[in-house]
Length: 304
Image (tube, rainbow, N blue to C red; front, side, top):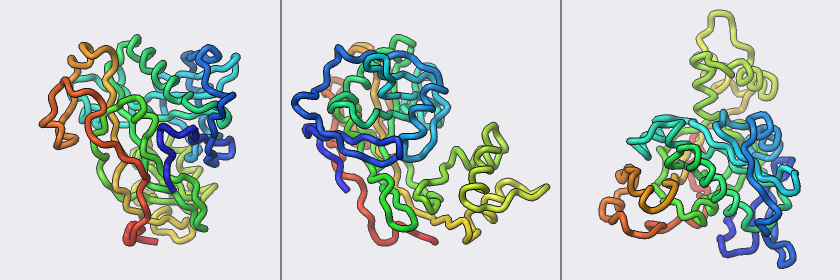
């Protein structure tokens, strides 16, 4: 499964049934910025748009979110968040996560918008973030395909062509890890598991979904949440968790503003060893971009 190059008239979209679709930017349907505007929106509005379309069926605890409107119709959402303060500090050690640095948690467009809409929307969002005092953005592109237990592809993997078109710096990959993959192909992510282990806000909904949708037994009185995750979810064959080795997401960095403003922000060059040899005046992008999602290889699936 390959992504389409940025020079192609084809763009990846997601339908309200969470299925991928390739949208052709037809000559008579080229992007016209005069038809669009970007507005700040609340989380409820963003979630109502994102959840039916995103392959994960979930949204993030965003701050802030922006909506792309065409003739007062919401056709796109970009949501920025702090999934991990540590990840933001690793990239931008001198910026305060949540105020000066943010992660792009969701970027979703309606399926029928013309090609190149993403690049324009991303650029406008960065302008609005800078006006709010945000100095830099961290983004991830997950190149690992998702398959259901029956072999159907629910997500082909992507390498971040939106960020490449926006001249983000590629900063290697995030840490490799073992993922818990559910029978429908989705990963039980670390944030959700930490909510359950620590009984943090949102843990009830996460536990209820594992019980109602995947057949995990309810947590017993006095049972430690970590033990429940191991015994009732990971190791119970009725749930059908598969342990999959994930080699990490492609990491992209974007310092906002003018070149002079960008020089005021220190990035962690150790994220990519060859950065040590780069001069600050080297134009973006610095280094080759990945062009294909990961391919399945023997040994990736490590336990059923």
